[in-house]
Length: 366
Image (cartoon, rainbow, N blue to C red; front, side, top):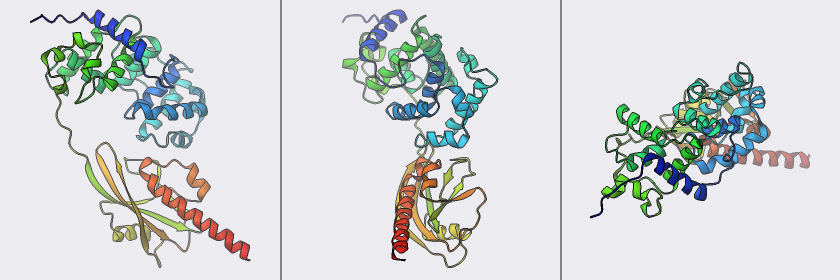
């Protein structure tokens, strides 16, 4: 049997960069080293699929082409531009960081991963990615893809959730960072993990590092990385109440941590039945009120799942609401609503459009 001799870290790096030069994925946010654009894309890429980010990135840049434009914007404008990406604390921190850079830092981004971590919303991974891509700092951007690739490449068989193994993986990743093209190397490792070194079913036959991969030589790369099973997300029943009055629907700013500060319809968490919906709307329309179920939806957050039933109710008077607004069609379109409200928003639009059509017919008859 022929002995296995994997390449040195330098040889592995050169092989992977050669592969990346031929097979790198094309995205709108690649090909730039401009710090603002790199920072924006990396914040968007947190907890969001790479394929999803491209259109949002381009639209966001059209609205806020530089850090000064973003700093001048209101939080509501930023949240509206972010609508659909989810995890809205990212947008709030993005806005805070933009104001910090545009103000205290006079428009100049920090140039090292250590200093980048001082910006709101920039953790170890994002700081490493930004510093390596924008400034060529040789530091590994350790995300799920890199942890998986490196644990297989070097046959790390311990639980990657433990601090000691995380440090081991970081040091191994650091050994692969070239003095030049560190950003390309991080993106090459990401692309390898996203297209070939996949979870569960790696496509080893296409891998440019097959000859270097210790887990491939052992015959079981799919068993790595080792990690504790995640807890299943908690199931939560939610009644979503669309309360209408005079061609408008009620939206309120959410105060709870999840979706805090975003506009939502009236919600009752823990019970999605009609009695719960009725109880929720009676605070705003206490008399002669009833609810009608018009649909259902499901939304998956990181740690919980909302199983929603959507109800329509009508009030006889539009009472003033603290931290709320009675929204017509135009206002509904302009306010930032989370993705979890997408089905309810469509239902609200349909009702408002039907009512607007009815009003036009009535006026014509007069």
